[in-house]
Image 1 (cartoon, rainbow, N blue to C red):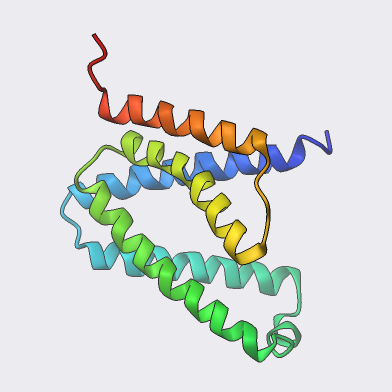
Image 2: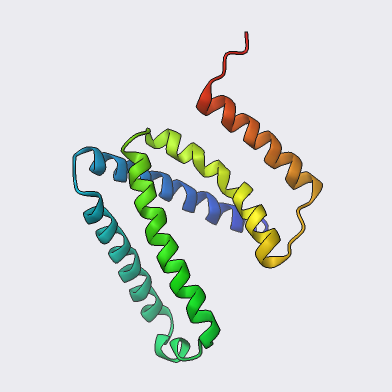
Length: 148
């Protein structure tokens, strides 16, 4: 069971994100202003994370232990997350939540590229082959080329 636990956590996370994307599309299509959706979704995510952190640990000691060079990364993450959420709502206004979540299949491709440059992680042949087939499958599902 220990070997399956991370995959179970990842599956639950992905399914929750799929639900969130579907609800976000529903709200966006009901003409709730995108900025309002972004503010509320990021505020409540931050609030729940902060309350969970207080409940589990003593956060004040941990905040002051963050190295100054890491603050730039934390601010950068917050900034690009806000941009990503804005792009997410723009996409959800124009494509179905199923199509949007299919685009999440691009995440491993970008993760492999970013981890190569930021973490010096070398992709394995199995990973490259898997990413190739995933890209081909995504192309066929989303763009439905005529083969015959």
